[in-house]
Image (cartoon, rainbow, N blue to C red; front, top):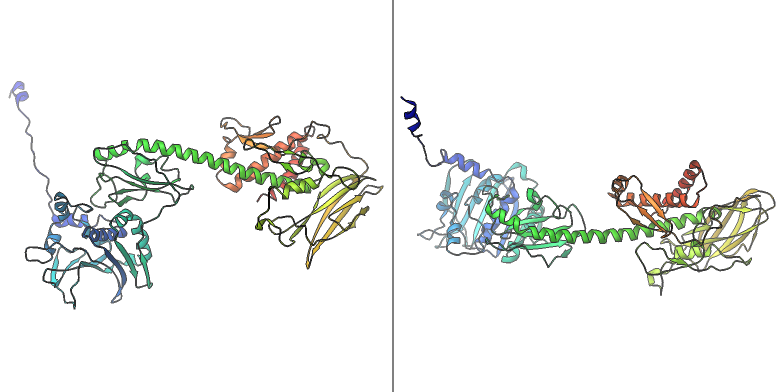
Amino acid sequence: MSRSAGKKRKKRVRSGKLRIADHWNAISIIASSQVNPLKAVAEFVENSIDARAKQIVIMRGKSRGEFYLKISDDGDGIPRDEQGLPDFRRVATHICDSIKRQFKSEGAKGIQGEFGIGLLSFWTVGQNLYLTCCGADGNPYKMTMAKDSPDFTVSKKRILLPFKGTDLMIHPLLPGLRSLTGEKIQRYLSSELRDRIRETKVTVKVIDRTSRKEFIVVPRQFTGRLLHDLEPAETAQGDIYLEIYLSDPGTVNQVGLYRRGTRVLPSITEIDQFEKEPWTAGYLQGVVDAPFLTLTPGTRHGIIRDDHFDVFCRAMVPVENHLQQIIEEQRRAEEERSSRQILRRVRRALKEAFLRLPKEEYDWFDIHNGKPQKKSGSLFSSGSMGGGSLDDNGRKNENSGAVAELDDEGEGQKEFFEFAGPLFSALISPKSSVVPVDQHKKYRVVCRDRSRRTVWDNLVYQWEITDGEGQLRGDDGESVVFIAPAEPCLTSLRVIVRQGDTECRDEALITVTDSLVEQSSKGREARKGLPGYTYRRAPGEMWRSRFEMEKNVIVINNGHRDFVYAGKKKSRKLRYISRLFCKELVLHNFPGLQTGELLERMIELSLYTEEHLK
C-alpha cells in the first residue's frame, strides 16, 4: 500500500453507552457509601418530614437482647399503588430513581430527597430493616430488607388498630453502635435538620428506653450578635440565605453549609475555597444556605464543584470582605479592652510592690502624694496627682496617698457590694525602708477584707518592736512614728490588728544607717504618675520596649517574636508586659548603676510586682 493511501485512510471511531455489569454490586456500593450512622438517621427523619409528618418519634431500646432503633411518624406514609396498597415494590426496585423527583416536577415544595438511595443507608446502622405502613383498606403491611441481601419481602401485619404514617425499625443495631444514645441523636439532629425542623414546625422526640430519658429536638440556637446587614450577590440559580452571628473567638465557632435547611457540612472551611479568613478566624457562628448547590449522591456530605458551585463562590466574595471588616473592628475593640485590663492590673501590682519596697529607693512617681484625679484623654494616658496631708511632725504624709489610690479608685457613692466586710489581712506600708540615725519615719497599716476592700471600722491596733533598737510614738493607732536610735541596726516592726475575735499581723524591716546615698531620682523635674503603654508593630526589629519620657508612655513592640509568643495566652501576656514595665522603670530611674546592679533591681521589682498580678 502506498504512503498516500495510508494517509487517506480514516481512523475508526468506536462509541457506546455506559452500563452496569453487576447491578447487585452497584447497589452494595451505594448502600455502603453512607459512612455516618447519624446521617442515616437524619435521612429517615427527612423522609418523614417530606411525607408532611407533624409528629416524629425516635425510639432506642432493646429487644431479645439486641439494640434496635425505631422511627415512627404521622405523615402520609408510603405512596400507594393502583390497589390502594403501600407501593413497597417501587421503593425496593427503583433505587436511584426516587418518586420524590416526580413530585418535584409536579410542583411539590419542601421535598429534600431526590436520589432514591436514602433507605439503603440502614446498612450503616443495623442488620434488618422493617418498614410498616397501612393501605387504603386500613390494614398494615410490612416490608423486610436485610443487609448484604438482594431480597425483600412484603407481608401483612397484624395489629389491633390501624395507624396513620410509617414505622421504620432497624434491628439489631451493628455492634459498634452501642454508644448511639438518644442524647447524641438529639444533638446531631438539632444541627443537621435545624432549619427544616424550624420551617416545618415538626415535633421530633427521642426516647431512649435504655437510659430512661426523653429528649425534644430543638433547632440549634447560636450565640453572639446577629449580623443583619449581610447582602450576598444575587445569582441566577437562587438566593443564598445567611444567618451569621459574631461571637467571642473560640475553636467551637463554626459556620455550617446548608442546602434547603439540611446541613451539608458542619463547617464551611471544609471546602478549600473557604479555608481562609473570615471563616477560619473563630469569631463566626451560623448558617450559609445555598439551595442550588449539587450534592454528592452517595453520602450527601459534600459539594460537587460544578457551575453552581462556582456561582456560589463568586457570590460570597462581597460577604467575605464585609465579614473581614467586622472581625477587624472586633479585634481592635478586644485589643483595647484587653489593654485596659492589663494596664490596670500592672499598675495595681506595681503600687503593691512600692508599698513593700524601700520608698527612699523606689519613690519615683507621685503616687505617694495623694488620690489621683481622673481626667479624660487617650486610653493609655496617666492621671495627674494631687497634694498629700501632713503627718504629726509637719511633713508631708507620703503613704496615705498611696493607700488611697490603691484602694479607692472609684468615685461617687458606694454601692452595697463596695462596703468592706470583716477584717482579713493587714499590711504595713512601707514594708521595707531605710532610716538615717536619730531620724524618724511614719508607718501605716492597711487593713483589708477578703475582697481587698479597705477596712476602717471597729479596729484595735497594737504596734511593737520585736527585734532591734528604736522607739515608737503613738503605738495604738492606724499609724505610728518610728524614732531611729543613734547607732545603725536592723529593726523589726510588728503590728497586731484586732476586730472582734479576728486578729491579723504583719511585720516590716527597718534599716537604720548612718549614711543615706542620694538617689538618682532626687532633684529631678516634677514626677509623673505611673506610665501607660501603647503598641508599635516592628516585626523586623529586635527591641521589645521603649520608654518615651515626654509622653510618659512605654511603647511595646507587638511584632517581636516574644510578644507574639506571650500573646497566645492571657496570663503569659500579662507577665510579659509587667516585666517590660519593670525593665523600663529600672532603666529610667537608675541611670547610673552598672549592669549587674540594674539586673538586681529588676529582679527585686519583678518579684514584688508579679506576686500581685491577679
